Image 1 (tube, helix red, strand yellow):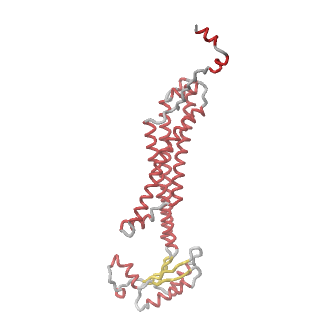
Image 2 (image 1 turned 30 degrees about the horizontal axis):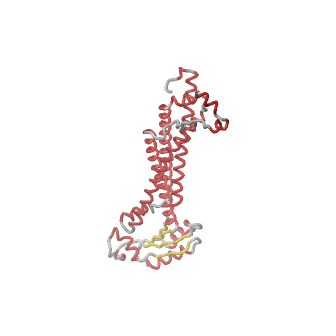
Length: 334
């Protein structure tokens, strides 16, 4: 009967009869999108990114503070006049200032009066000092042109010849120490960054090998049925790129938040002993636009290193599979 019904169908009815649609199961990724190992790797990369960005920001802050100190110190020189019996201190101070200003490269000179000198000594000797009863040196501060400084040696010789009690301090020792400190800090920061990146690369290598060990049969099947090494490596590369972007993004955002919170605290606690001491030692807790760009660049570098490391590890592991397949005696340690 069914056969007769099918024959009785007109051609138009045969055309309109729909065939059942084929349902294609969506392709699943080679690696699961999220597992315990992946979550642990995200946390590790986040910690590495946080430490790297924190180190980068701290180094930039110290460099900026050292540069400010160096500029302030190298902008001025000091002439110290030691008291002596029968010495007219005021006349000697004026003479020393005039001699210094006669050199090319000097801008202005300021004589520190007794009140200013007393304020300098107040933390050690207390208030209400009578400088006439103490052999306290007096100072002349000379502002110089940083781009065209005077001849300090010639100035020192002239002062020594004209005023034996005068001593010129051009602060070169302090400037050299500040430059050395800044360079040392930068080198330490670079060393910490290198250690952080090295630890991150090693972590990614072990994580990739662990992921390959858990999914080795899938990789072997794909490879043996004709999948190219680049295809398998690209799948692992995508997986670890997502992980690294999540981890490095979280760690970098946390580091940027730390700097923002520190700057907000400093702005809210101005003129307090804690804020003054922190400002004197570290300067302002602000990394600026360049600092935040550096944090973003660090995040991208971490993601790039993670991706490249995962790709190279996968390709090397597939090469090991081929080597073992050609010579089973080399299967130890693979």
